[in-house]
Length: 282
Image 1 (spheres, one colour):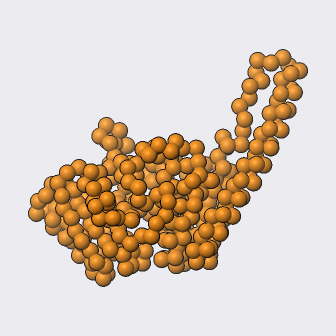
Image 2 (image 1 turned 180 degrees about the vertical axis):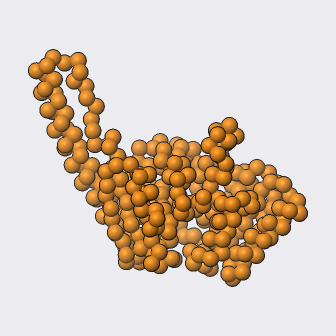
C-alpha cells in the first residue's frame, strides 16, 4: 500500500496539510502517517538567573524548572489535540489507514528517518512560528525539499477541490521526473493537465514540450501545451491564474545553492507567490 507522511505543527496550515494528505491518499489508495515534531526550543525557558545572588539563583532556577515542566505539559496536550483533529479530518475524508506520531527533536531528521518507506511527503508552506506575510516561507521548507528524495506536496493555506493541474516543464532532470510521475500515477487520473514551458520559443523547446505532452497523454489524460517567452516564474504564475489551476507540479531546485544565492530560485519564487499547492520533484 502506498504511504504518505504528513507534517503538522499546530499552525493554521495543519488543517490544510491534513486535507491535502487525505485527497492524495484517497486517490492513491494510501495510508497516512501524521507526524508532529516538537523542537527542543519549544520546551525550554531562557535562564535569566545569572546576575542574581546565589540563594536567590537557586530559588529562581527551581521556579524556572517548574515553568518549563508546566509548559512542556501544555505543549504536549496541545500537540495531542492537534493530532486528534488532523486524524479526524483525514478519516472523515474517507481514508481508513491513519496513524499519528509525536516526537521531540528535529523535523528534518524525523522526515529523513521515514522517507524510505514513504511515497510522498506533505507539508505546509509556513510553520506555527512563521510570519504570515505572503512572501515568507517556513524556515524548514527549503531544507526539507532539498533533502527529499520523494515528491513533496506543499499545501496551500486552504484546500479546494483539485481538477486542473499545471506542469511547469523546462526539460531538466527533475522536470522529466515530474512528467514521468504524472504520466503513471493514479493521483492525476481524470484531471485536466496543462504543460507550460517558459523561455526561448524555438523548435527544440516545442519538440521537448510535445514529447512531454505525448508521454502524459499516452495514459489517456487530456493534455494542453503552452509555450511562451518570458521568465519562468512570471509565465507560470500568469498561467496558474488564467487557467484556474488547482495544483502546480514542477521540478525543484535544479541549481546549486550558490547559483540561487546570486540569481534566485524559480522554485522558491513559485512557492512564495502562488496560492495553489505545489508538488515538487528532486
